[in-house]
Amino acid sequence: MAMDFSSIPIIDISPLLAKSDDPKMADDPAVLDVVTQLDKACTQAGFFYVKGHGIPDTLLKGVRDITRRFFELPYEEKAKIKMTPATGFRGYEKIGENITQGAPDMHEAIDCYREVTKGMYGDLGKVMEGYNHWPQNPPKFRVLMEEYISLCKDLAKKIMRGIALALGGSPYEFEGDRAGDPFWVMRIIGYPGLSSVNDIGCGAHTDYGLLTLLNQDDGINALQVKNLSGEWISAPPVPGTFVCNIGDMLKIYSNGLYESTLHRVINNSSKYRVSVVYFYETNFDTVVEPLDTYKTRTKGDKKFERAVYGEHLVKKVLTNFVEE
Image (tube, rainbow, N blue to C red; front, side, top):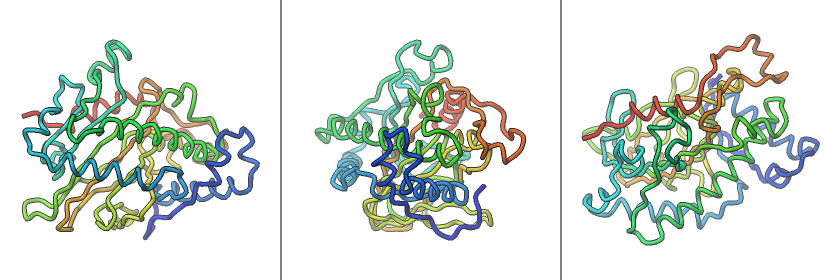
């Protein structure tokens, strides 16, 4: 579980990525060094930065820049892709519409999910049926974001191979029936500068799935992570990196070895802050339960009841949005 960490580690994952498609990757000393660092970070903090991830800085900045241009548009333009239950909870939500622990969050966002066609997951997926509603303005918004989603999906899959090794399993524990056909979520978020009304950009929460990749504005310190003593530890931007954290489903898979740590966003800057957050998940209808590896068994009996990811997601979605 999360410990009394005072900072978030930075991990160079390039050796892992170089061998990520090699079935014998676990024999490589450089890979094992990355795996050791991932294990320590997931055990102690549940958060870590990654560098050497291979996604160009120009693209990281490009998705933030085009996001900012969208949020600068008049409300009437942004509302053309307004999120409602009828859209499968995809689209734009204005400031205060997203709810965390019953309180409105001071951010606006575009919420995106993997497309769910009618009947794809039966009754389980009915709430999430729909396709993403991309703005026509700024131009090329959809093209850029879909390229970014594809790269994030591939990157997250490779990081999860390292985490699978860290948990004492094969590199492919999180493929096949567990996450071989992964669901994904992306939130494109804008946080206004400091306000006297409410400074909580996003209230304290954990993430739902396996692994989160956060691309945040440089130069604005807003993300905070809670350690075991209840202190909020800053996760300031490190240019060229992603902030990664593990979600509720990975906590279950690890039998509690890894923590889905509480975090929040408070933008005390006068500047508008943009973040683009990609969530890599299990298969939508996967039944999640602790892995059976020598490491997860060290925690004794299975500590968690089985969970179905899609049920967990739908429950969260239905309590996170207030319709006008």
